[in-house]
Length: 172
Image 1 (tube, one colour):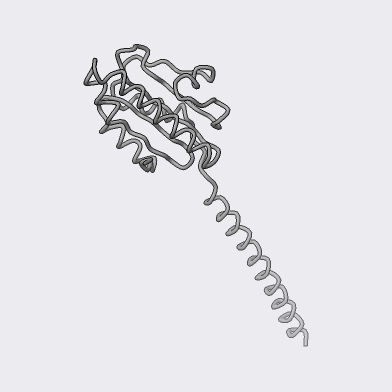
Image 2 (image 1 turned 90 degrees about the vertical axis):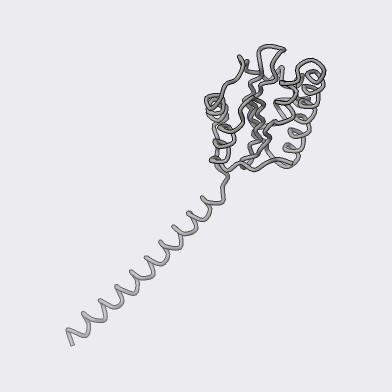
């Protein structure tokens, strides 16, 4: 009789333990699933500096929010964050621009602004500096999650490799 009580308590304890383990496993599974679906946060300055470090650029200057509109036609409030470096001289088209967008509307605004910027740059170089015009025409415009990246430079191979490692997809 005593052994029966001990066995009954043991099985009841095991049953409760199994339920606790099941609940804990489900909670861990849910936390993991939620974590995988969240968009990764990117350090735009780190991306920009990594791109600049992969190949040669002319001297670049960083744009602030007040000058963003004059270059791209949208305001800094239209994006979550940005890091933009453009050539410090009028003789070069070199550009590294990273924009984190909030949503599809922000993405469309940024892509439209980049398109206008590139059209203006191409027009200004077409008649006078063919090599710079060709750089603009060959630009890289990609997206990694909610970050849109524009690169205008002479040697795209190392930049492309870096962006591919980030999981970049071409923006059409």
